[in-house]
Length: 265
Image 1 (spheres, rainbow, N blue to C red):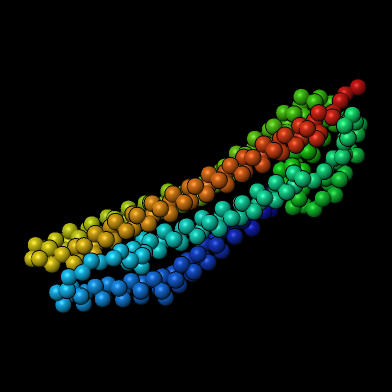
Image 2: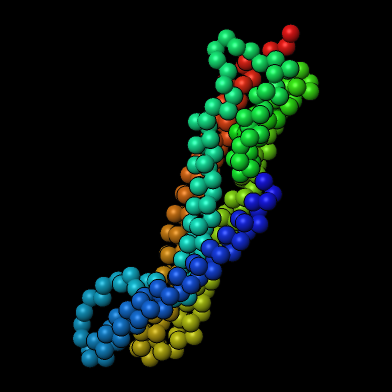
């Protein structure tokens, strides 16, 4: 399993670089030019003294650098969760495989464990690294060495519990991203309010355009960051639910397909 960690690290770094490239390209080529055009039209209408009701534009809401950073982190989090979701689906697909063909009424004796481990040992390395084959191999080896069914059940439970802890710890990066996004939004809020206070003298003179623009930065960044954070946390909980079900189903599989057939004479 450790040999998969370098690939996952490279995948995460590559996903971050791709997210930066894609999001920045969209912002630089499309969102910011559209926002600047809308703001320029508004300035011209204000300069002409025209009375109008301004519609809230999505391009203006998204144009600032804080929002760009939030979308980069969002795409990065989606990439990480997509990778883990794919692994969870592979683990669930493994549960449909009959690794040990034991019919009703048949028993597994400690002397038979070597015969039942051969089909699992013949699997590809990446398949053997999955939770179900590891749990079944541990169960068969434990039964062969201890000849105690209770020890086998404890071995399966221990492997499933450690797998659950590992999956939970590997989601720490996504949870950090979900925390960092609102923090970036609050940075935009502080920056916008600071700019607005710096232009307060213009508001006293009757020119409130600069103040309103700065306040727009303050509130837009927080609004976008909170919405993205809500979406990410929802997906994190859904992914965690799928992973927990896979672990529980693996333990149930081992109990029903393997452990209940074990007997000592």
